[in-house]
Image (cartoon, rainbow, N blue to C red; front, side, top):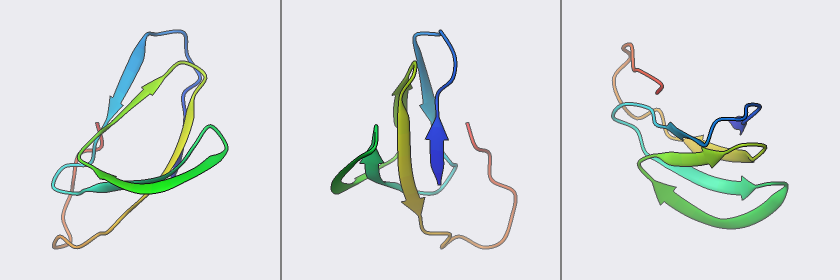
Length: 63
């Protein structure tokens, strides 16, 4: 999943309830995979991550 921050606000925190996120790219640069609970994305920044949908099928908030 790729997230692009297109606003002037200071920062944006992103998480998916009950799921870990593995960051694989930041600002078009591959990174060492990093497992996190949430991401902080600043203005004009982009980030790619993968997540394992290991939880039972249900509705999960993306915040």
